Length: 482
Ligand SMILES: NC(=O)C1=CN([C@@H]2O[C@H](COP(=O)(O)OP(=O)(O)OC[C@H]3O[C@@H](n4cnc5c(N)ncnc54)[C@H](O)[C@@H]3O)[C@@H](O)[C@H]2O)[C@@H](O)CC1
Ligand SMILES: [K+]
Image (cartoon, rainbow, N blue to C red; front, side, top):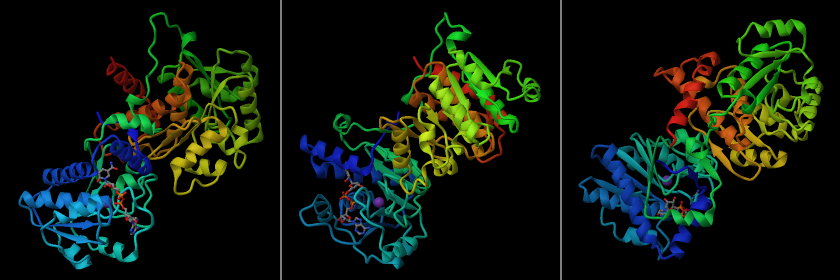
């Protein structure tokens, strides 16, 4: 299985140094990295005229090794060096073993190639590419294979520093980097291959990675003991607004399917209660004012926001629920009601903003969304989930996870309400907030994937449709576990 830890470029550099201090030789790692690139190229492409663009650092060094091995395999290869490696460096060692043709670092050379290997910059990227380098990269007509990352892509954030080329294939080493999963990095990498180059996993003990690829290996779903009864599996309460009752119903339906023992909607008035009762038969509808339900401590988790208005009343309700010691998943109206006032959300367990809501509450996240979500989680001592095609989940203790299994079909109204309900349903059964949020996000994507059933990932999908697949997705994770 692909390891779940993700290493930012500086952590990767530390891993490298730890291994070297333990006696691992730099040239050995470089040889293994270059060999992995050559192997991936040979597996995916037919022999053709290869041009390796080599930078001055170790990324370039990997390129020299790959060039040599491809040439030995009979491929026509040339190298265009942007700058020579620093004398005495591992890359300089790799360069001296290259006996094949060197060509100018020029657009015409790139345009003539049948395959371009981009070994300009990897983890050592320090500033945006110069315009002349961008010009050369943009001349490529052929597929581009990136060594470690497409040059210009910040491996920590997934954002190009200005420009990064579109790769058909990216070969990275030891562990994936956050930028391989975060957008637009994930798209720019094309197909991603992870190669092991001899670095032992034990170096991770010193790095203590805190960023992970979200997947079932990262959390454990609650398993119902035989003596379970509905009251032992939590009670999720979802206050509904008078308008947008559908949002609350979706959240409540999702909480049930995620396994909460009891789920009830709280109606703001009699007419809304009637409307809500016409929904699923298993959903309970309370007609008391939400605050009157707070005395019942078995109502352990509240979903606040789907379909609630962004008003001071919503903010007050959130405060009362938190002060009563209940867990809260804050979404929609509850988030917008905290626009510019993040402290209004203090005490919630999980908040699930989309990009717009995140910006309203905390300000625009900027280039480094991973850092911004971590900062939001730390600031509120809550789990923060920034929803999107590359949902980021961060815990106040510094852990973060990146999800990449959401099909674009999930970009539809109601999808977020379902997610908030799923997370609440998992929390209600006793999962810890970070694990519940990660599991909810992943199962949400998995349910959508199932609902698509082989249709294109961007095909339209109704929340009702993928909600029906939550139970199966959950069951398949449970049954794949010993
Ligand atoms: N475990 C590891 O960390 C391993 C790393 N390897 C390779 O080493 C790479 C990292 O090597 P380095 O740390 O030498 O870094 P890079 O090779 O990514 O680049 C560093 C060099 O590029 C220059 N530079 C940075 N940005 C520039 C820009 N925009 N324009 C012009 N010059 C710029 C720097 O001044 C420095 O000379 C990885 O990406 C990977 O490909 C492999 O060799 C094997 C093992
Ligand atoms: K590169």
